[in-house]
View 1 (cartoon, rainbow, N blue to C red):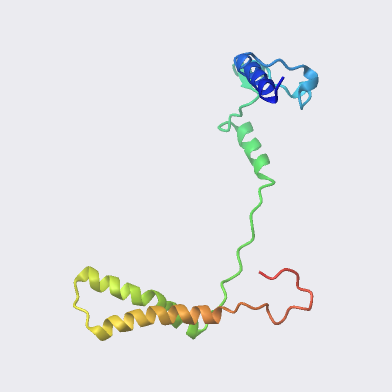
View 2 (cartoon, rainbow, N blue to C red):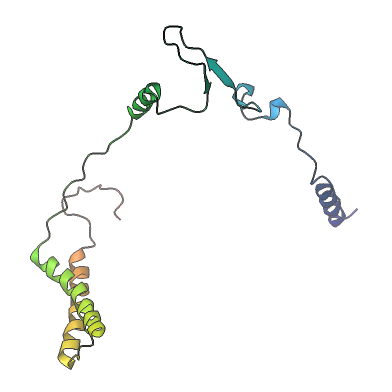
Length: 161
């Protein structure tokens, strides 16, 4: 018997059992039987005391009525452990050179787009100034970026990204 014929036989068995239902023993399940869901949702009937004179209410175990007082109390109890992050620290102050570089980076192309949208006639020196402002702003920001580790870190500062 060749290896190819063994594979063909295995493949035929897989195809033949395609529509069969899987049969699992309870020992094969990765969780205990107590965690299996019933076929239909369970229903509980809660009877109110005679003093309140309220009709009998069906209460579903999986749903809560948040419009009633007990539902509001449950919502408050669930909200108790909600994490609210502290406010973020303020943004660092930028110096004048960085502000001018950002203005040139966005101002040059903005001027070119505005002049094209409004149909302004650009002279050669205006076009050169706008393109030079864009390139100069980009270069200034890249040069000022600083790619080395901070000078205040010790000899063992871990990974430097």
